[in-house]
Every structure is written in structure tokens, then in C-alpha cells.
Image (cartoon, one colour):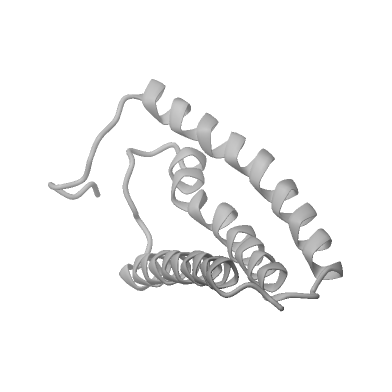
Length: 122
């Protein structure tokens, strides 16, 4: 049952959104796997560790973001969430948590780079 406040898109928009998510998966997962492999070997400084953690968070986020779209397309229904409210809450919380971690890691990376520029190693 579709809720009153749910957004309804045409099938062509659904296919376009699905194409974007598939492209993100095809580029994001291998790219982040390469980054994890690369930075796991170079854990020599703080920047490498922060890049490694950012790649791991992105590797988790990219497939997770496409779950609602894949669910809608596979079940051939109107866009919306038809599962239990708890599943929706868990996914929403996980999305927000991973976004917050990403922002924190990027801010930490910016701070470490700024610190190295202002106070260079002697």
C-alpha cells in the first residue's frame, strides 16, 4: 500500500535512477577496492590511514545506498518502502551514520594537511 505522502515517479525516471546507481556501483566498488588495497600497504602516515578509512566507509556506502532502488525495481512496484518500519529506520540510521563518518574523516584529513602546511616537519 502506497502512503499518501510517497513520491511517485514514471517508469522512465525509475530506469534512469537505476542506471545512475548501477554506474555508481560499477565505478565505486572497484575504485574503492583499489584504494583500500593501495592505502593498506602504505600506512606510514596519518593521511594514508585517513584515506584508507574513507575508502572503507565509501565501500560500505556505495552498495548500501542502492538497496531501496533495487528493492523497488525488483519488486516491480511503485517507489516506496514496503518492508517493516524497523528495516527502514535501520537503513536510514546507517546512511546518516556513514555520512557523518565520511564528513569527520574528510575534516580530519583537511585538518592534518593544514597542520602540516602551517607547522612543517623539521
